[in-house]
Image (cartoon, rainbow, N blue to C red; front, side, top):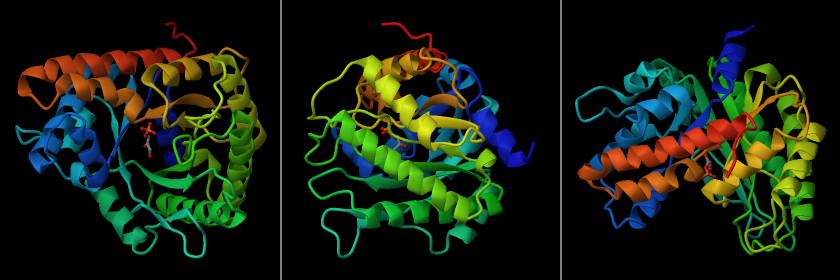
Length: 334
Ligand code: 13P
């Protein structure tokens, strides 16, 4: 097995998933606003240290952590670099390398993700710091006249260029094409999500092949097939069946693993839906989580930015990590 394959398989080892803690400076400010905490470098450090110091979660349920540029260079309060702190719990450090979804010229309300210029050099530096894997998120919105083929193509092409550069640098790419559930207006049906997700993943794998990406040395991070947040509600079973069907139709079985984003779901929904997917038959790839909000939301509230609440925050994080570990084995129950 190639080194890239080994790392990809380690990321999706049975009962484990990925913690997405790569909120950009702008996004983490929004999260901190919800607990009325100022977004200073020290507060961001303390928050991440609260999470990474939850030993039970990190050793038992988390295989890797996606970090932001600031965080991968940061150290805990006692001076231990975060990268070393993660290594001590056998968690692989990952790095978000895109520079954000920017308005796509000539297209209304659509974006294309940037960050390819200079990426080869940045990846070489991240590899030296210790990054084992990376992440790039393309964003596909659903609305009256969107997504256009042009935006799906542009985002898929950028994802493939990024993935090829990662593998050249010995870094496993997490390929994240997110079909938004919580975009505007967000009232689409699950059928629409299924169609757009099928088209998007089809284009992504076509571009990955064209770019020469080794499909056994990457992880796919897709959305689940769900209705828009303001769309008609459906059962857990329907989400599970449509998601697995969509993935089977588009994702080659040589891909070691699929790790979902939680985008717009409650923490409990994200666990319930993942678990249900494991109970509708044998799957050709590992199917697990790479959640941001669905792993962190309760922990953030319990911590509230206060040193005396670090243990309460850790307990909340450990609970969600354990629930998602169970879900990744099809063993979660309400
Ligand atoms: P959510 O699980 O909060 O959607 O975040 C995952 C992620 O990494 C988005 O890029």
